[in-house]
Amino acid sequence: MDINAWFADMVRFLDKYSVLFIGGVKNTLILSIIAGVLSVLVGSGLCFLRMSRVPPLRWFANIWIEFVRGTPVLVQIMMVYYGLPLLGIQLPVPTILGKAGERAAYGILALTINSGGYICEIIRSGIQSVDPGQMEAARSIGFGPVRSMLMIVMPQAVKNILPNFGNEFANLIKASSQVMVIGVAELMFTYNTISGTSGRAFLPLVVIALLYFTMTFIVGLGVRALESHFKKSDR
Amino acid sequence: MTVHLREKKPSAQEMLEHYGTPDPKKFNAALDPLIVILNLRKRFKSLEVLKGVELYVRKGDVVVLIGPSGSGKSTLLRCINRLETIQGGDILFEGSSIVRGPGDVNKLRRRIGMVFQHFNLFPHLTVLDNITLGPRYLRKMSREEANALADRLLERVGLADKRDAYPSQLSGGQKQRIAIARALAMEPEVMLFDEPTSALDPEMVGEVLEVMKDLARDGMTMIIVTHEMGFAREVADKVVFMADGVIQEEGPPEKIFNHPKNERLVSFLGKIL
View 1 (cartoon, rainbow over the protein chains, first blue to last red):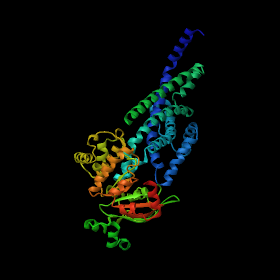
View 2 (tube, rainbow over the protein chains, first blue to last red; view 1 turned 90 degrees about the horizontal axis):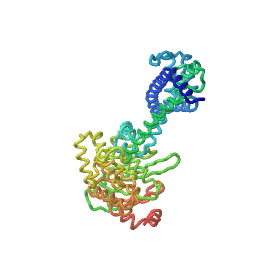
View 3 (tube, rainbow over the protein chains, first blue to last red; view 1 turned 90 degrees about the vertical axis):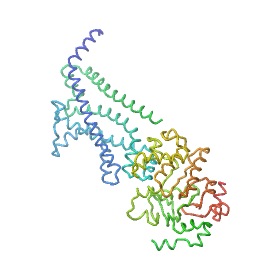
View 4 (cartoon, each protein chain N blue to C red; view 1 turned 120 degrees about the vertical axis):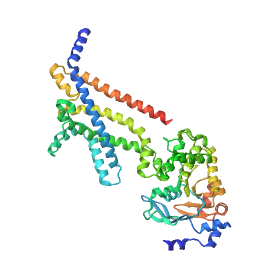
């Protein structure tokens, strides 16, 4: 193929479908950011249960985490989408995602359940990476368990937790592509539309892959910046 | 409990023999122990670490615990400020049980200073903040008061110039002296030392022991787990030899080091001296 013709073809393709791609990126980001924020909240709560002294609370958290880790995200998304209505639960419709918004709430919930489990494990391992002697020292001065955790252990655990939050967020962006199966109009969902109308199977995938890569790469840069920042403060 | 205590309290004659002290002030204090440990039992799962330990610590006493590793010395120390739960027996602090009853463990720990083998300074805080954290939040001191207190303590441990340093910038010996200052900032009635020099390079052991000697001279009640026999001999009012989870022999250093009776003690001293 002539390189000039190929180039012209590319430009025409991108020009025609860029609005769809950009819309998809926007929705993917909205979806991921909302689910990301929620999963930090859910994950923190879950972590609290997981480290609780009350066994049933610990069991609940353990079951949640094992389920999330042991089943595919796709299955989790579909279970939320088809399962909740069976239980008679109707989720509110967020208008922020446009026309396909009615499904987005299910997608966000499923991603939050999934990511929340991982966030919980990140927080827990971050806390456990702090030398137990720190907690003992704080307690032996006379600080209670909550204050010891907040003033002594958490500030040190954050160094291990924050970069991993970034990694998990990158995972979340990728996992969000799977909510297309329930018809949420995020980036991956645009593939159906574009490949259908343009008749091209591969080209849209390349664009989509590049767009996902750009998003996760930027997050990755942030993670590395955080890591080197914390390494500096270690010295 | 009180009856039990009275039974267990050594007679004046026994005290004189035991401690060999002619100092009437010390003698009176001896009749009223600050810490009493009665038949203390501690198990880790199926491993019995303390098998009925009994110990009296008077106000102003320097008690040094020695013994082979795994003998339960550190565990005994950690039981006193309730870093370990116990399975039997009792620990009395100023006459009231710290194990039973509704006592607030956080309040108790404020009165008991603890120094760890691995210092356990807070790495994210400056030396000053390491020392003032407790006074500011628990003793409700203003920042100025707490800083003044910290400066006095830093002066005392000879590290006034390290006020604004972070723990990672200090040597091991300096870290341990800061850890002692941090514990002192709560103005505790007793100080517990858990192998305070074991993690130090040999040339730094001296500076930490100096600070501890200074404390002892000031009349601080101290319970020390250590392998520094020279220090024990010089500073201790009472040396306690533990092995296999029980106290095998105790007494003044002269008696323990020069006229050991217990077989285990004799062989222990033979190995280390």
